[in-house]
Image (cartoon, rainbow, N blue to C red):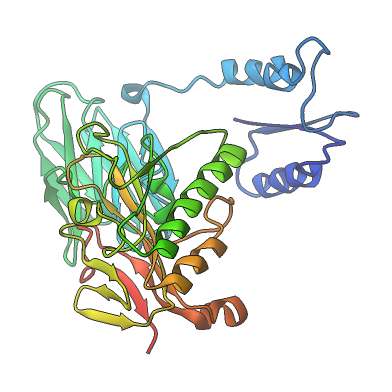
Length: 372
């Protein structure tokens, strides 16, 4: 169930947003409640505890109590859709690990029949799927009928899971995805790098102007995140950062390979390399001293953290990243984006490269577009 609660005099988020959500839900999910508190603004409650009234709202918690989800071993049907397994991947005994087309909605609708010892269902835009065997007792094989591909998998007395990978010929048994591949918790795109206790690291190896930009940009991002996200990330110089002291924390680098000393330590195998005058994407070089670049990549010494880069090929490109509103909701960024000042007036005509790495974080298996 969904409970939508809104003050009808909200001057921060208009009540029309709640009404729009309810109208959209009415089309496909009618188990929802919309309540508008008369005369209330963005927050409401008793004078002694302002804001608590709309947070500790009894009817909402009553709905939660009535909508307790069944345990995975009790669930017989899962109908699940996600736009990004890196954000949301699991429902009951089903997990979508990887997509075919990045950020296109991926869905799976499966039924579990413990008596018949089988899963039956369909998928869309799913490259790697995991099914928990928890609903099954005994060690007899379980039959899987998925998108008309039929497989028999060992059960192991309801313990463990089975992994299925899509190929040109249908589905086949697979192994769990290696930690260095895209998977739940680390699948991009760029904005997802602002997680795992991220640290902002500005470069000090550039010119005085380049170093000043990096420091100011890191500080601006920290203040913006404090205002919009209610968090206070650390800001460090590249000379102060120690890999072991910040283990498993995402790192946001400001500056390119020539201006940030951490680049070679954190991005030694990255297929995207940015230096003064050029962005190199695998074997393709985009030349210019006015290019702005944003991208994310796995931190090679961590199973969970990212490295994200905010940089340019020159001072003009660096300053151009100041116009990238990546802390504003509804502004999506891919894994990689390279653009010029022309984008300020011509929109996408100023984009030189954009796209998503493959599930192995490679360019060759990814989905990229490059300007002529």
